[in-house]
Figure 1 (cartoon, rainbow, N blue to C red):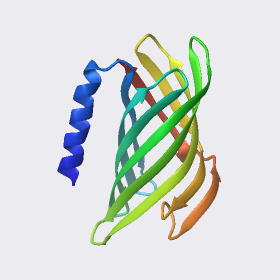
Figure 2 (cartoon, rainbow, N blue to C red):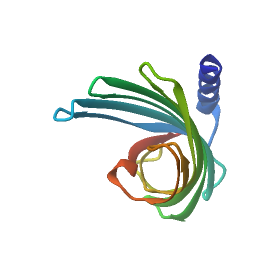
Figure 3 (spheres, rainbow, N blue to C red):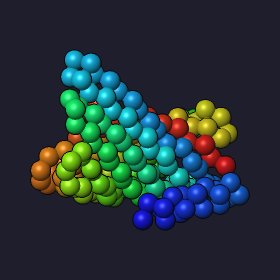
Figure 4 (cartoon, rainbow, N blue to C red):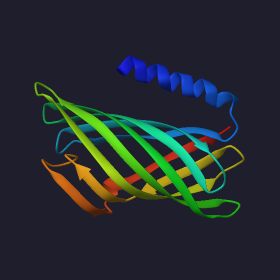
Length: 171
């Protein structure tokens, strides 16, 4: 399954080079907390297509590796979204992503667990030039299953963990 997904991503990226309205980008993070003996690393490439100035469709692939006091957790997620841009001027665009995600966690010496979410994420895009944009998303409103706890959750999250900063390159 992982090889098939990788082939799909490479195929979409190849097509993106020739397509107008296609964008690629993503975000990453690395964090080390020495007092807790924890390290985390996350990378989330993204590809999408702008249908017009208001609507876009895209997907984000996420991989993270967390180490906390001798325990390792590897996570993989796929998060397709539809984006509605409700305000735009020459530099700034405000948008709302309707997203659904599914992912898998694998902890060292434990079984793989699944998780998922469906909801809304607001964001802002700041156009740096004709091709590059700075992107920030903050918060989540929706439903999550087995994300950070052993159960279902519904509500609004506005924590620093819900801040995502990245970039887009539009062809």
